Length: 118
Image (cartoon, rainbow, N blue to C red; front, side, top):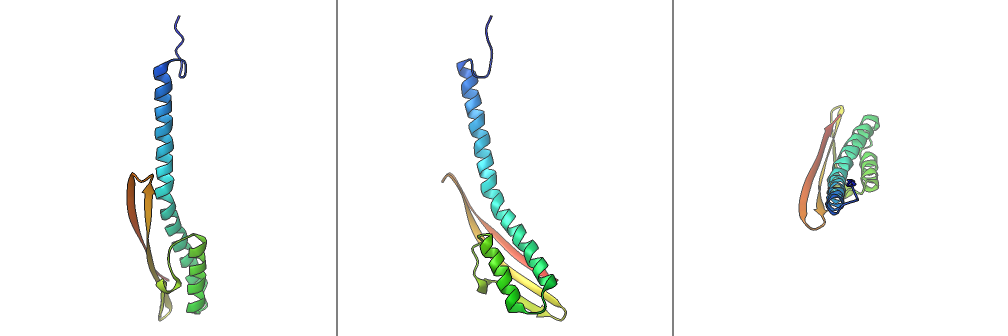
């Protein structure tokens, strides 16, 4: 009788190694593309919360948003964050781009913008 198993024959091992490498590559690529979108979402949520509780001190709010962006490692400068007050509403606008590189095989520049009015 022949033993058939995943690692017992030559074809089974190479198939296993190929599938494992393919899954690892897909996970790596997913993390590389997912992190910039996570950072965008986190900063947008944080900025929304900060302008809801702000006491109309726009420079302090800008500083708090910039600090959070630095914690998230988002490549923006404090001067790139525009905060304007119109009547009872506060508007926050900013934008940045991040380059995603997958082992030098694929490279894409992602553009992110935040435009919130509360």
